Amino acid sequence: MVISPAVIESEEVIRQAVPAKMGFADIAAGNLIGTVPYFTLFNLGLIAVLIPAAAPPTVRTLDWPVLVGVSLLVAILGAAGSSPALTGCSSRPSRPPM
Image (cartoon, rainbow, N blue to C red; front, side, top):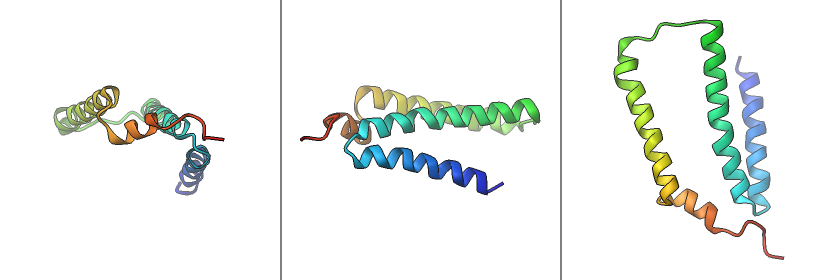
């Protein structure tokens, strides 16, 4: 159970490290922003369909609102350009100087 996630994550690290090293930080950031939600939602959906599980009431009253709130805050800060990491990626040229 540990080997397959490790292989998948190592592939993701390579997918982000190569473009970042070549000077394409925007591609690496886009890959990260796209793959993390996809893998998370796909895996959670697949698990929920195959093995439905009951969530304790604390998850619905505490964990989910915090998760949604933090996600919205990060999305708003990213869209407003207030995040140093996202601003740093977007302020670099998309191609390295020749």
